[in-house]
Image (cartoon, rainbow, N blue to C red; front, side, top):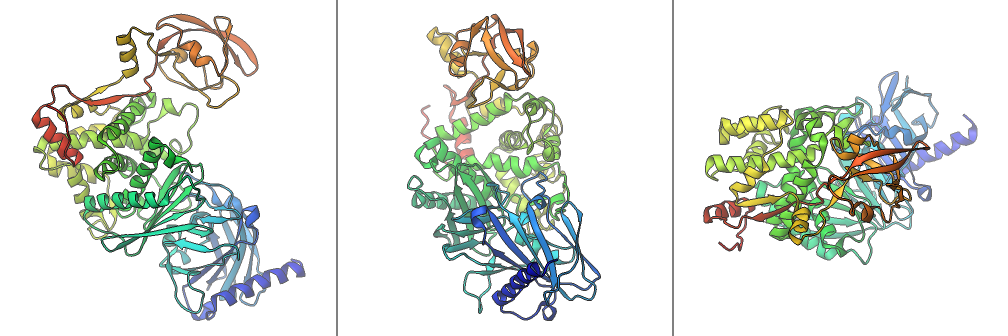
Length: 623
């Protein structure tokens, strides 16, 4: 190590110690200190310093390979650079990388160690960190190191703001003292640190309160097209509906909605916050804004179902490798059932909008061939290799545990109500599970396999239990028609075709593929198993050039295909890996673009009462 590099590192150590203005760690056992600086924010780096006590000849530090709530190996350590270590005097010590996410330090005769490193934060995602000139999103799993011993110790975090940045927002508890207010934070252990994203920079904060509980909407990337005042009003309605649903407030501090309208999508739940990403333009389009509200509803519901009540396998995290569970259909799927339902109960969407959302869930489930390959439990277990790493054949090889879990929730709710004369519902089951397996129950936050099924049987009897067992462990489809009929509703699975036939117009057709969107070429994205294209031998990435010798282009292909007739045989001219060839294909009825739910023309008064009890609100439906 050169003298110049040593002096630079020593300067970093001195700066860290001055910032903390606290006694040596040797005098304060079992406390870990982290410091965040942003000298290279224009290049998307965060500089991290770690200070912790040691009492062994060697210390092994690790960085998680995944983050809770996002079940895929992300290998965060790949973005760590320039890692160095020194003792309290600034003397450099030996560091050896011993695994993809582990570093071993020679610490014989040392009582505390200071580690310095850079992290490239250039992936804008709810599970990753992002740094730019205006703000930073820090997700702890990909930034902070830990050791086996230090994981259970209290963790301090110092956030050093650049002069041009004005705000820090995090659910971590601030430490009041000689440090400038709002810069030093404390978590009880490493798990809480990872669970507490930090947003710093030029951001906007909107505070509101409901029944004594504080909330904050934190917005980064704010524009005139996003009305945060309206968003706060709507958040308050969602909060009220969900607090009413659960009947218990789980928070001991403000809850933060960390919102990034930056043209990305997604959400990730935490104990006292959630990270959400959407479009800046979402509020200018009603369906897009409803999607954002549904995202809020989904992530906030996780405050109970996942963060404080989750599968036993996920109670104690192994940050190094996959943690398997067969209950993600419950953790995510039942949350997906309730996100839109509670959005309706909150009064933010109309009944026709809720039915559109529900019908879309039905359509998106039934048009995926992969539902015939994996059960809800199998899809949950394979999340690490299927859900988060989709490929061109995913539609044929798996089913979303979000979606199938949502449908299981819908039919189970109807079955429980039917079996008990509406005295009990899925709402009752969820609240009973939280009482038993939540933080104050015997489960201490974790439920074993079969807990949900047992609760269903206890409240609704063995017949409903048997139905649920079959839906979870086999590829059986939920009987959504039976459930809808009990409420006096009906489902139209091909409204476009029905309308065309009634008007005497050509019915929608296709060849059983989806096309790569926004592409200059007409390339196949997915081939639906059992469809015309699959039977003919098309595969993903094939490029379509012509139909019966007539040229088709991306801009005209849909029009040309819609001029074909169901059952008609045509010759496709294709390119595969640079080679021209032809395949005959038989035109099929189009995969429906939408389903429609509507009240039955002969809906009875009893069915209307059932419908209103389920939806939680009175409806104006003519008899």
